Image 1 (tube, rainbow, N blue to C red):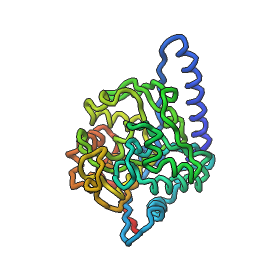
Image 2: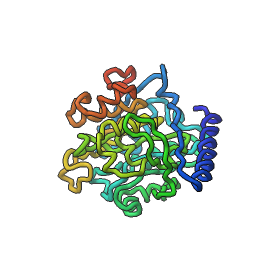
Image 3: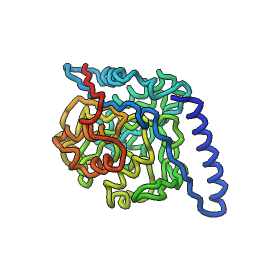
Image 4: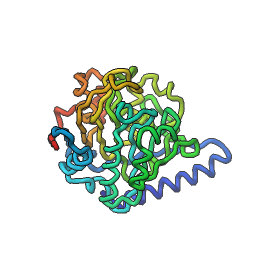
Length: 315
């Protein structure tokens, strides 16, 4: 990654936000800002999809996470020395990790460690939670991960939201969680589970937790909303946590009877391919999931059968 370019972009964002703050004293201002398309997902850059599987009894989640990144050249492909990294897990529900409503804290901790080893200046954990943030941080294990690694656990609050022009087919101007767009490197780290409205919640839908506004409004025409948000945020990398998967009563669950142990991770720089592969874990055809179908149609990526580099690693 071009660190000088990325740092310049971050400084430009800060400048725009300072201007916004001054303008907003006298009226309403909207930032017209999008993350630039990540270098590995742009144009003719090679797309990849990697399945990671924990095959051995008592396998290490940390080891599997490391091995899956090694398969594509390491975290240094995405994080440069001095980068500010934002990691967007799903920690929206105050549910213990074994209930599979939230991203496995072991996966989150391993990804943070890899970012730090690659030279990240700062790593931020960001999510606009549904349940109270303080309780979510404690119950999901994210608070302990932040303590163990020194990562910043960003508390969602209205002062960190800014109205931005998303330019989507459905979402035009919407409040965005500022630390997400300020980052040099953005990592999407969702958990795979079923969802009563969208069918599944995987990588692309995880961005609903990166914005403010009324969630019930986001749930109207939800498939287009998901694709609009993915177009705006453009993560550098997607790692879907399918170590424990919620197979019923999603998205919040609440019982171990709702959970299947799959011991899998899915890594890709193509959001459509990542979600398509994860959909198959639920015996779902990707083309029958609205946001996956729309994502391909609207140019976000391709189903994984078209990915030139489809690898599998195991521990």
